[in-house]
Length: 322
Image 1 (cartoon, rainbow, N blue to C red):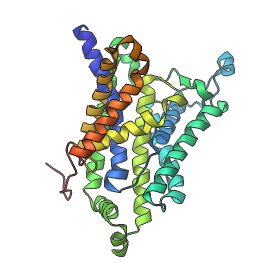
Image 2 (tube, rainbow, N blue to C red; image 1 turned 180 degrees about the vertical axis):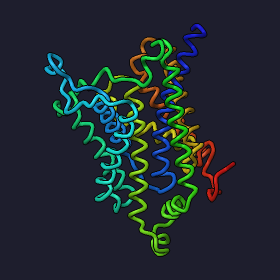
Image 3 (cartoon, helix red, strand yellow; image 1 turned 90 degrees about the vertical axis):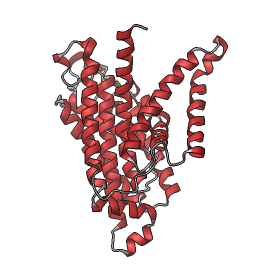
Image 4 (spheres, rainbow, N blue to C red; image 1 turned 30 degrees about the vertical axis):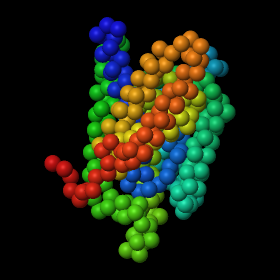
């Protein structure tokens, strides 16, 4: 592979890892700091991507309206798509939280994964909503007209990293405040937090909504990077399981660990593709399952030998690190 091709490949890897890092930060608020066992990340991934797509693309007209069905198309700029994705995911998280946040951890997990799959099936089966299983294509990208298409990924990498940095700083500020300390108290002992006068349900709701809004932004970033989305993208494997592996690998309860885990696990996931390409021809048909096995073994090794993750949880959170 030539040097230019290698650099382009690494940029693409960094973009996807950065997008998954956004999801990890959202999950870290819910699980790492509050103890909410959310296995419905794929649902907010899906909603964020479709919301931003429909906000930023025009509604099909003329002959295209016969083949592309879309409930609305506002043709607004990229930033409106990001904000819209966050708001819609926050509203849906609030509605979901009303009946589910009083459930125990295992029942909450069952409820969230079922709700996430319901969202995916709605987009898949309701053709009038967002073109059914064919999905939406031709999504606009920010600043696309200002650069050569061959070099656009460098621009989008900067966009992703800037948004990731803003989200990281916001979470760091919030989690080191009294609000963040209440979340940790709820995670450790709900009863003690409640007897201290804290409204446990309200803080859980805030955590669920805040984390889901960040996941919606991640979905929007993914949609505008790939420029095409369809329901089969938002499966539990790519939309939930691998994000949990990233957070556990990096260190739950540590935002730096969430970022590190996203880049390390995504690098390993891409690396396993090269490994399976070296398999004999008779085994190539099983290559995807071998990649799943490798990631599963990696998670088991981490849980056995490094259960706190690569960085582990930060113990001192009262003030920002200079």
